[in-house]
Figure (cartoon, rainbow, N blue to C red):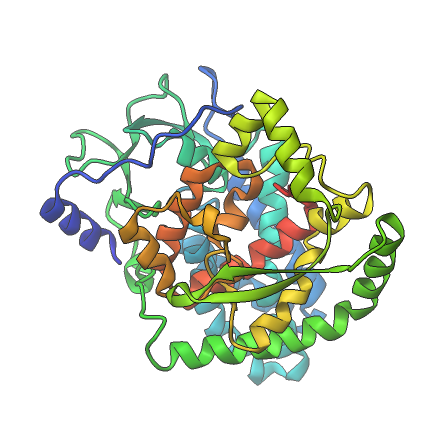
Length: 426
């Protein structure tokens, strides 16, 4: 959906609803202060340098000159630093602008074409690494004024570089309303789906050429067939690669708490159909009685459970091995069997048990049921266990309403980062 279409929708529907009210939590590490600075130049230089280093590592020396037009195209598309551009849109611009360079590399030679292809495959990861390093050093983002209940959304999506700060100069603003303030040099519009679109100034020529991500119908050909082909191919490859690790974890689980090492449970997938999913057991066999006893005797734990359906720390989790398989999502690997059988997809709303689904309003529950549940999804890579129940509802709705192959590809990249770092696990 383009920025103009977003504005038109807002004018037709009225002011967009802000994200659901949520319980306060500790702010992210780099929450803006009254002295927050604009790190646009630093961010642009760092991301450009990361791409240049990756190009030097992947392109053969005779074809290194191909990096010049490639990086120039990225700069023209606003990717350095690209504040306010959604992650999937960044990926789309990178790959579409890299395609002509990839085709041009074919004239240079096979090694050049392979080098450009490798660069395009790895550049989202190198960009994410550079961006995260800047964030950890408090050198990422620019302070913006916020209208509406959007601060939490921007904090969770810190990679956008839009840092809420009521003391920011009134030239940049993020709003959830249809009425854009006059005199703003740059305005960002937040939709009810959690998407961000830059409204002013007018998009550059590159941005007009590329446009914004347009939602597609995941049930229509060829998208449905592409999704299924990716599910099967990736599941077979991942099952083969992870088999030794899974075997070692199964042995460790049995040593820690003798009994079945595979946990199965019925959960809801597409159309609300029950699906028996499989996971490595990460909890004690008597975990249910442990949970009931804890909630009955610990009021604080009962409140946390009601808000998140999770506990941190969780006394039901097996020591060491339980933490390991949950932190690095090894316990989810057996669900690849469900993916092969067509009961789940690699990407989609998480397969939940019935009590988890009670938090969804009827219309959003039906929206959620319209596509298969997935092993990973927008909620998992955005907030995971650091969010609460309101976040689950909002991110699931955003994923379905804004579905595209680009978004799925971006979620796969972000899943790699979440798994390797253990971010938000619990």
